[in-house]
Structures are given as C-alpha cells and as structure tokens.
Image (cartoon, rainbow, N blue to C red; front, side):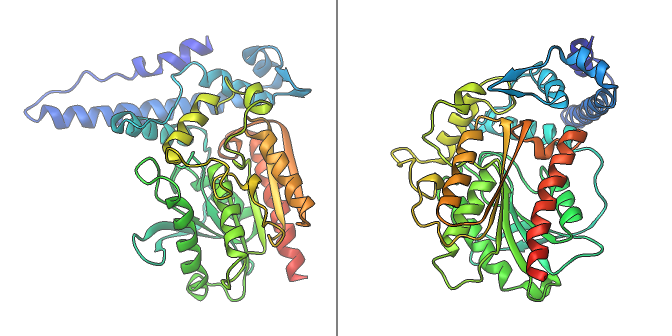
Length: 382
C-alpha cells in the first residue's frame, strides 16, 4: 500500500489542461506546478507516516535491520524504505544529468525538512576577492555573543543555502548563537581546491565584519556536515598557521575525512542507506582532479600531521553511514594530538540525518549536538 501511494503520487498529479498559443510556456508552468504538488504530497505523506504509532510504523518498515551490532532507527528505516522506491540521486559530470540531480537533491531536502523555524535571517555576500559568495545570517531573538560559521554538505556538488536552511535555524535556536551559512562554489565546474579556497576567503571576510553582524568579541565555531564538515576542519587547520582570528570550536557532522578509504563502514553501508558507495565515488570524481593524490591533507584530513593546534571539536557520526569509520578515526586522531574532542555517535542514524528534521529521532539528535556546541560556547563565557 505504501509503495502504491508513494510511487503513484506523480501519476495522480498529472495535468491535462495545457492549451493556448504559448504552449511551451504553459507546459513549463504546468511542469513546475506538478512537481511542487508532488513534492508537497510526498512531504505530507512522510510526515503522516512518521506520526503513526510505533507498532504501525514497524509493520510498514518491516523487521528491524541490525548490522555490525547496531539497529537502524525506526524512522530512518521507514524513510530508507520509501527512498529506495525511487531512482537514486547521483551526481554526474554530464551537465544535463548534473542539473537534474541537483534539482532532485534540492527537492528531497524540502520533503524531509519539516516545519521551518521562524527566525530573523539576512542574505548577504561574503568573500575577500572575487567572486563574492552568497551567505545567510541567522539571528535568534535572544542570542549570545557567538557565531557558527557553517559550510553545508552535498559532496561538493549538491546543496546550497536553502537545502540546509532549517538545519541552520535549529542550530541557531539551540545554541543561541548566530549562524552564518556560506555558499561556496561547486564541483565539477569548480573542482578542488576551489571550495577550500572559498571557505578561507569567506572566513577572512566575515571575521573582519563582525560588528556589522551584531557581534563584539564573539566565540567563533566553524562547522559543517559531510563535505562541509571536511571543509570546516581543513579551514581550522589552515587558520592555525595564520594570524587570522582563530575559531574556538569545530562542529563536524559526519565528516568526510579519508577519501581513499575502502572496507569497514564503506562496505557495510555501501547500498540502501541513502548515501551509497557509488555516489561517493562519483562525488570524488567530480571534486578531485584526475591524477591528484587523494591523501592530500586538504582532501583527506585524516592524513594531516599538523592538527595539534586545532580548537576543541565535536565530531558527530551516524551508525549506518558509509563515512562512519573515518569520522570515528578522525576523532581519535584529534584526541591523540591533544585536541579536546567530544565524539558523539547516533547509532541508529543514517548519513544526512541532520536534514531529516521531520523525524523526531533525527531532530532530537540535532538538538543534542547543538547542545554540546552551546556547552563549549558557555564554557568560554564562564
């Protein structure tokens, strides 16, 4: 029944009313309307399913999935089951397929985003030099003198300010800090090291404009999820060799840390848990130039040997994530280098859970990690 409902939504929304002289324009208008309607229906269906009693969700999701001593969270299992009914979202070097994958990624994040947290926001441009980068400043009503400089995930190919909008709102709400989300240039049009350079250009500009953002001598954290988590820790390491104002914390949400890695969680969760092994390979092909050594520390932070000056880090991993093991190992490496580390693993979660805010369990995990960051911020103020 669920499969029929989920897959047949597009057929139920097809429009046959197109007529008139400007047929091409009307077809495009109808297509956009249809896709928006489909998206809204999927979001409503998913939210309705997630609100069902646990026994009903279990009946729909099937038997518990247990791998490597962990049990997949029930909400995540239900979402994975629905996601597997549709074609996978994969990046591509082909321009037409690339745009289609970006549209699909954007739509999928809207489906799982849930109700938007109301908050004052301001869209600005940041970055020393050109091109300037779009950014969005989130300001809680009662904010502390702190900022999270946030870099979104998406394999350096997907994602933008809007795909991570509600996540940033929740991070700002819980921490009480202002959050500045930065839109860096994407691969494959702009491969490595463009995103790394953009992160540095944006950060330098932002710390020179703090009073403009209503901040005096703020606690600054750098953070991001997945690809953005990698960019955040690379930025922190690069900053440790400069006289630029240093961040005082890192929030690394299921970071990509070891590009050449094989086996372990990369194999255990290579298929069927949202982020697949094939997608990781394509993302890497889009982002990393041919003949480039994948163990370069700005590509794989786990290979860096100059991390002892990095600020305290909150490293978040998900139990059913292909990137789980490298996140665990990076947390260990930071700790061995003398960096204060709080490693948090959400054992039943999948990669990307921080965007799946329609799920109570995922939202609770986001609030928990944000609370840990707030704890670091309040330590400074005390």
